[in-house]
Image 1 (tube, rainbow, N blue to C red):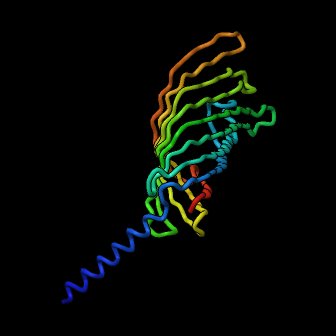
Image 2: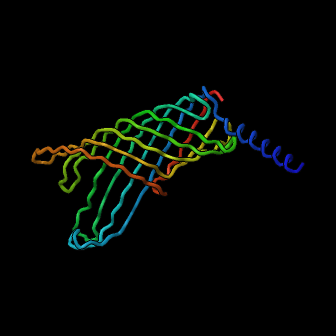
Image 3: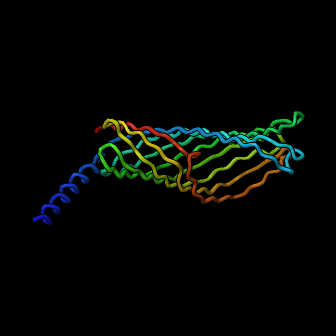
Length: 222
């Protein structure tokens, strides 16, 4: 009798859990966007930089990522997005006679993605996003005589995240990095008009607070 009663409780809990996991139905349209800003500042002393003087290194990165998707099945969305980012690197020696160094990189990514939702309740769950597409980067010459650089190619990435839905049509998400792959053709030219080409492939995993990204999603048709 006790075994049968325990089995009934387990079955009821399983049914409730399965119902909670179907919160995002096929046919739903989602409009999403994320924004991220990070700044890393470090004081470093090097015998090979500015005659051994201490210098301050600053790295600022801003990202904006709008997207739209359609749920082809329960908890599975297919869509497209774009990511625009700008990174500014500066280095300034504590020596009063030195000139601060600045360099900026602008990047644009455009491509399709697939996102799977694993809803633990009607309001909270996990997400996994697999995306790929075209990437173009531009890095003008810095004020220290460095060369102009452009890069173009493709990217792919897998990003885990979480989602919280305070009301049925609004989702608030967060992620702290993921797995990425880039294959880019890099072109550099300097003041003497010499141009060099190189192909660079990068595979890496980056997780942490520096990659913390917040997002918002509006679900149509729920």
